[in-house]
Length: 346
Image (cartoon, rainbow, N blue to C red; front, side, top):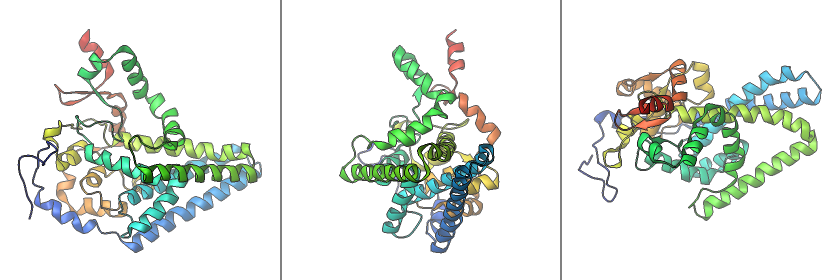
């Protein structure tokens, strides 16, 4: 029985009855062991083979320009590993919660991301995405035009630096994965703090063993390109999923999961090969509507649900405009640029 009413008890949110087609998507929210195992094989085997090849080439003093293209592919595979990690955080990759946790911790070691801590913060991101009254939970810092105008000068300077593409997508991702992830999210419990400690130890041991066996300089030459590229791609994907032309944000009492998913998340249509490397995470509106759908079922759900196809498609070319959409204008109900705000002031 599907209930509806005026408000979500105690939350102040409107409760909206989900459309009938929503319940038909439940069949896709069932993990498949064959699909999961196949994805593990076609991700981890090429990743470690490629990593071994890169190590051999670097240690054998091959020209570094021959190594870098392989590093780019390894970085893309590491992005795919992070998507598996992401599914494990939602307990959607396997049917077993324990299996998701074990695999999630392992993927977290490789991506320098603590499993239980990230799982905690990411669940709050899903509960608050596109909610103007609940920003700041695992999301990109976004101010409204009104907030920006009334903010102190130092806050506006920090915000402009933060939203600058040269900051957000070059040093920003490295700072996030290598430094910020070394500390537990504020307000978490013991389990989350322990997961950060375990991950930090694992990352330190991996780097120490690599530096001891390969040498510090060779370890850096191997790791730095992979970390730089994979983290930048990861941050870009997260950014473009919620910061794009046509996105909608809602005040808390008008928020509901269907609107937040279909209007507050993008369908980032990429070439098939990039959809493969990114684990179909570009089909983000479906992921937010049903987090239990594993990445390997997202495309099928999209293909079989016409209502999921009735949204604006975000292409790579169109997504570039999002780099200059920095503030939410409540009057116009859209993201606007710093330049447009400055021009309006003039």
